[in-house]
Length: 521
Image (cartoon, rainbow, N blue to C red; front, side, top):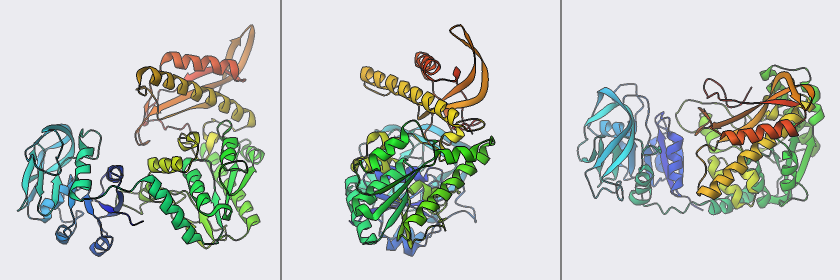
């Protein structure tokens, strides 16, 4: 299946991935490349359209990121956003200057050119989001102003469009419509890149690549590795071996749920190995209280166990990983934005497994696309929409030493908490037809190392305090505490104290990120 392609050229903008996602929401495939990417490479990819991102620099300064003029002479539609718009004007003979005052936040855009293809179906007055310190003081020759209050210019004949604001963010009320107009209208994309086609095409691609070879996958039970396992299984069946290391630090019943889907009685045809390593981890973690030391032990022990199982299997042709597109971009391999974090799935290959090549069937997908692929493969919703869960698992939701008893306490408390939140949210949805505004993006129970005196019945207790955490976030980089209704928290408190042995207090964590983190350790 030959995909239509729109390329995002990244000039260091903070919204580069968001631009790509908006394009994909039009059912058009999109990739991010650095502004340093050679023009010949861009031409060879034969894109249907090119989008230039924002960025922190001033395009008229000598050492600022730029692109050669020929980009705008290829006959390929180009859309410049913020810095990308300024750069287009600057390179093509317009003028960009420093503004007296930075423009940041929402403003009203007035559409002047009613027949502009970018503004087709957009209100004459609409709200857009600005974030810039420079402004376009003079449009380049051949361009006409299509909207004002925020510089917007176009050369419709050459299919070049420059818009000073950010249509990719939700603050721009009709931004999705503008981007859709560019991608489907100006670029004339068919919009036929859908998840069923992706799944079908990827299965075919895997079969061709693997042939009669063997594939090994470390299955964590998370969304990415589960969907990778599902795809590989549909493609090559028993040629795939999945190793699931149950370190005893998963949420309640999660290990059994993973085995239920991928094990011998599950819906997928593959070789499934479950390593029940709970006691091994508890022994290794005994007496360890420092968070980083716990993380290191949990990570290293996983490698040792995976290594042991791999040796039993012997040589394989491919090592599979659940790498997804944000991992690639954030590791500095995709766009131009600063390396946010390095990902274990990207770049560094393990040297303890004898394999010829690596295979990453989800490398082109964003997280929401991975979930769509999971549903397409028939993976249960519960697993597909599983909340983010850290690699070290409950090991970093237990303050201090990790013991079997503490794991049992936090598993039971967490199960009750998530059950009550989900019940309350579902009841609200039934009554109001929508999700409650307080619904958190992540919520879990953690165990403090605090013990205190309590009274239960006529007896004195000296037990642990559980902390409940719930946050609302878009990108997990910043987060606010979710305003869970008091009656819901009260129900959780009653159930935890009555049903979970060893707990006599329940706290609710109000801390935002920053200064706190979403996880506890």
